[in-house]
Image (cartoon, rainbow, N blue to C red; front, side, top):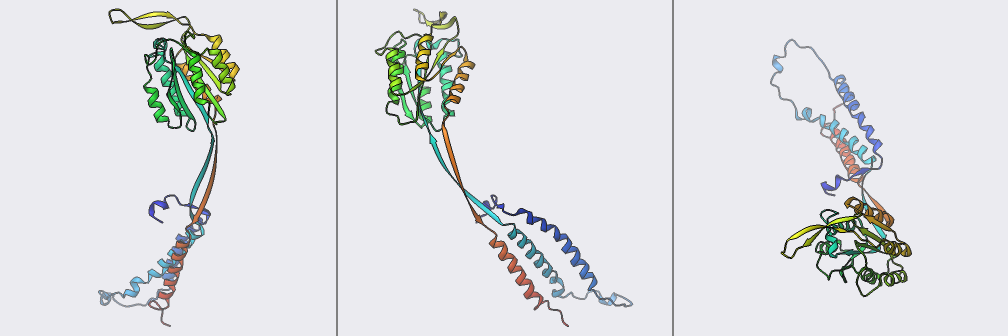
Length: 336
């Protein structure tokens, strides 16, 4: 066992260490006994004794008591039962398959959320992905048409990389809510997960696309997909950057229009909920709320195995005791 491993040692019976408080008592008793066993005689002067060599046996005789102390200390440590443990964890997870359906139409560049709706939506989606460690998540983007940006995956770094690349203008402009929902359902069609979820985010009204939103809703219900819908945009009008004929960008106020009755219908009939995000904080709170509603069940079973390490200390105690006995009755044997 290496030195690094001893940092993780625990003791099964640590109360035996209280016995080490007897060490000062033993030392005191030994010093007292040594003083009692000293002989004495009177001489007129110590001058003749100066310079006489001291026998090596006299110098080394305290070694017997040191060996006895080492025997006692090692025995106490052995009785405290030093041991190391090895923990094995078996993790079983009932993962949830989730598809993020994000509107990337031109209106998502409105600046009522900072810096704009699209960047705000991407940021909270990134945080949501980080919080769903054991789930498979995919990404669908839609505007005038829909596109799978990333299939459902457990490689969240790849997913976040694909999300970071999302920008307005990738698809023909428009708001095809029906196609965005239908494509998201298609990503989950063959999923074997116990729970299948879509988070559909838009800031507008369905105005294009080959699939009607109500048809997409029936498809979602058929595949038992729960849909959480989010309407993004402030109440009233919002600042929208508009390109001018001369190539410049001018910010104009544009009326916010979200088909909330449709979004509520989609959410309600699939067992989800509809949320309205009017600013960055409310959008972040919505994702936190969905995160709480869709908790992944994770069961962790731990197996702990202990390895005993008292044997080396027991051997040290035995060796010290044996050596003391041998030395006491050989080299340091007192003459009768």
